[in-house]
Image 1 (tube, helix red, strand yellow):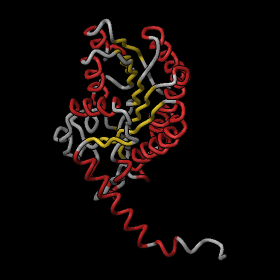
Image 2 (cartoon, helix red, strand yellow):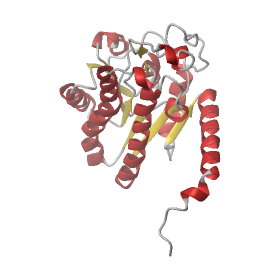
Image 3 (cartoon, rainbow, N blue to C red):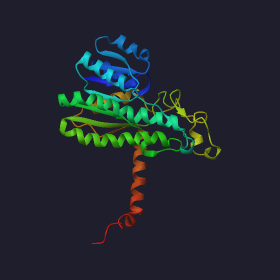
Image 4 (tube, rainbow, N blue to C red):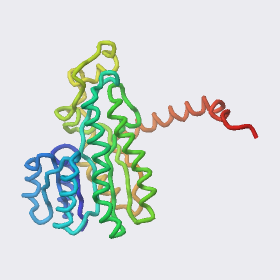
Length: 276
């Protein structure tokens, strides 16, 4: 039996991950900023679930959640950094305060929880850290520059972390979902207060008032949760797990486009070394 700590379990993929983990009999520390949003999970699984209030931007709450997990279950085997939300704005439209909050939640919130769980994982010589990214980090759609940036930062951080932890018996991996039928593009999505008319045909088309994608996404959160568990439990977990046909298609298209760009400019790229 493994013990999971999952951030952002009130709705969406985090909720699906928590449901799947508890359904299979594992222990789960289920968290949300408003603990009442996840109390039903603890009530339904009184022996294996612990509901904890957790705002990942709050150092004290992060450490308290990890301590609660250790006190109740003896340690954390799997950390899933899922807490977060979407933010849409053309780069010029993005407001300093909300953008800083976005980075604090996604990037520094992920770092906070990683630093809090690693001492215990290092002591036991085992553990898995799962950091949620997005296909947006790869395809960078108009209007999602800031969101793509935080997810790209998480991916780069995780790759270095994976190399650092491998000799210690600990695994770090990224999950890159495509569109899933959750609240991500609906209630949970934030956007800039100002819409600059010049971006109406690019970033403007993806503002909440113009986006018709919400509720029609092909991704099934229940299947995503099953796939995550399978990847975590395999002998050699991947560095990156893509979830959804749109994620796989988008990743491959972005990779092909990048490879073509590198090939086109390769001669100039290689012209900058000192002559022998």
